[in-house]
Length: 182
Ligand SMILES: *[C@@H]1O[C@H](CO)[C@@H](O)[C@H](O)[C@H]1NC(C)=O
Image 1 (cartoon, helix red, strand yellow):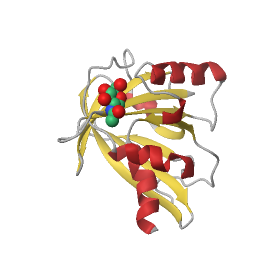
Image 2 (tube, rainbow, N blue to C red):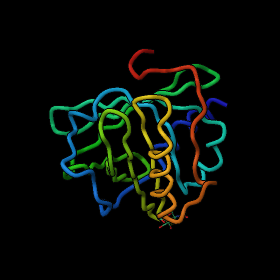
Image 3 (cartoon, rainbow, N blue to C red):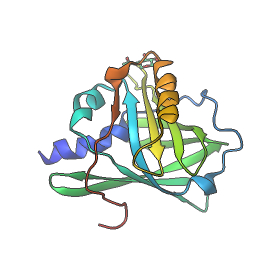
Image 4 (cartoon, protein in one colour):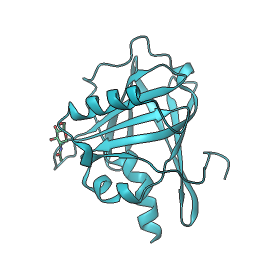
């Protein structure tokens, strides 16, 4: 069971990798993306994600600037066993584009659009060594929910990659776990 709970959070991040060919938010300002976000929704064609998504609760994300231009991404989420968390160091590639490496390979992350104060749309892609490309699209909110027009834009973006509503989840409420506080 412990492994199952780990996977719940991990699939959000480990199902990914590479391809920085998605345009990033113009003049992306890393210092303004910092702080706490709710992971309001996510969509992916990662098999593990699709199996787990309906049992997942809404994670909390914390972005922090690091001295070398990288962006530390910490994630925390509630499980029946309590708060769990992990963090990743997004290395700077170019404005709005980052990459990080983990045992599964390299992940390319693009901040596709954000107004910094209410929503942020993050795209990530993986090309596994012996598998098909996998994508993960996440909608972050400074609040737990986002207005319909933002959700509609997110869905339009998601559907543009050939995904449908079965690849997508708006995470249900959970007791909050804030990265760094447990
Ligand atoms: C996931 O979606 C991307 C983008 O449409 C596509 O290139 C890829 O083949 C898909 N992967 C799987 C496993 O369906």
